[in-house]
Amino acid sequence: MSDPDIGLDTLLDLDGSILEQEGGHWIKIEVRRVPMSVHALHGIRYSLTLHDKYGTRVLGYDNAHAVKPPKKFKFSGRRLPYDHRHRTSSDRGVPYAFESAYRLLEDFFAEVDRAIKEAQQ
Image 1 (cartoon, rainbow, N blue to C red):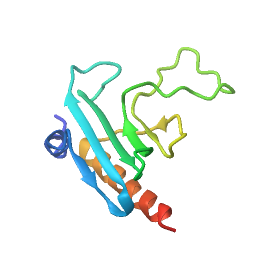
Image 2 (image 1 turned 90 degrees about the horizontal axis):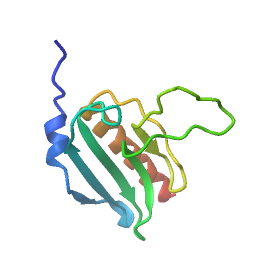
Image 3 (image 1 turned 90 degrees about the vertical axis):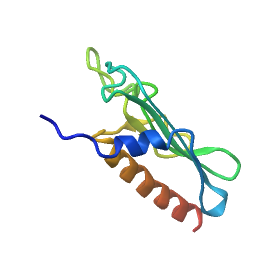
Image 4 (image 1 turned 180 degrees about the horizontal axis):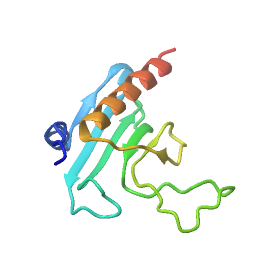
């Protein structure tokens, strides 16, 4: 029997949150339960984003769409990952290895700290 995801309730409780950060940055969290599927293996649909003072997304973790592989690689017949992160405002997404809601929150907030620190330099 697998261990329950202790962070899932916390993540679900954060749905709809807007959290102010340093330097005018802000975080938006959207999460809801959905039926488990190929697109939502964990039974949740999520979007965790960091925005600058102008409202531009500068960082994001979500599972709203599949990550498209670079054209130089052949991915015929492979399952495209839905869990991914956007490391910059122009990043189209790189796969994210979703382990748990708790780990998602840890990884996201560590990246938020890094991005805000970088922006202040």
